[in-house]
Length: 331
Ligand SMILES: NC(=O)C1=CN([C@@H]2O[C@H](COP(=O)(O)OP(=O)(O)OC[C@H]3O[C@@H](n4cnc5c(N)ncnc54)[C@H](O)[C@@H]3O)[C@@H](O)[C@H]2O)C=CC1
Ligand SMILES: O=C1[C@@H](O)[C@H](O)[C@@H](O)[C@H](O)[C@H]1O
Image (cartoon, rainbow, N blue to C red; front, side, top):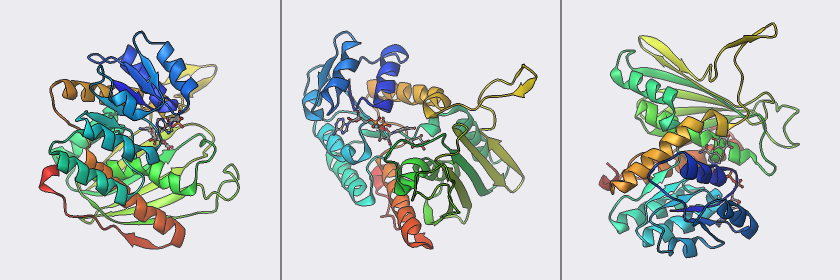
């Protein structure tokens, strides 16, 4: 298979595909930075480095593609993969806005067969899966509210206010839709006084309120520069009880006069198992000739909600989300 984009996520996925996952072999890696692709390819027997996604996808030994280039580059790579009938695991966001996401929905429907899985890996995280099962079981009754916290140690240079929504809150947008099995109908983004640790001019943290089709409310604290680690938590408030995840990712250690757990530095460590399960599930489905997991409809819905969120962030107030009717193809 080919991996497109060999930056932080792409290189980690290559490591995972090569050393952790069974049933797949990385034969091509692509990066517009030729040296970066070459250094990743050189570490793997039989792997060729490319600078053009189309050239890698045309290679005879490429049967599937993992896309981990930046969001704005996804549309072209997805169209190329669909044109070659290659199964794809595309990192989130599927595309950066609703119009481009719609073009992908239309292209996949014209293709006539689902080929795209989107990298919303929280659906494969053990704690999220347990929370989903609990909510689906009905034991706690109907879910009324979802409280979510998403804190990053720091953000890479160039990370913008809009990306807090399109790149970070995108995960809670998908988690809310998936956990509650409801579409999102409106979003409001609030901007408290920023932390002095954020770059000048950046509104960080932000507080997002999401309304759903069945009248549930979800909130998300997104904090890009919390300064102490990477922390993702969620609590569902239901009619007969509450359920909370994400409090304790590591073992509780007593040592040096202290007791407690550690906070991981980033998503690569916090969600390592989830990425492993996500990629293994994709490889297994691909080998069976199937496409499973979050798909292009989920990528489109998330893009539309995030786009509305960026409008709320910029202009203030509550913005309604307009989704097209869900095509039967994505039922
Ligand atoms: N699921 C998750 O938790 C996470 C997902 N991501 C997603 O993964 C993707 C990559 O993010 P990072 O690895 O953090 O970015 P990065 O900036 O570290 O790496 C991106 C790489 O893609 C290369 N690139 C740029 N345009 C390209 C093109 N047209 N074709 C091929 N290569 C190209 C760049 O040279 C760079 O090496 C993004 O879509 C991002 O949103 C990122 C972090 C976590
Ligand atoms: O996708 C991711 C990053 O792009 C984003 O910047 C982080 O905030 C998220 O936690 C991570 O999962």
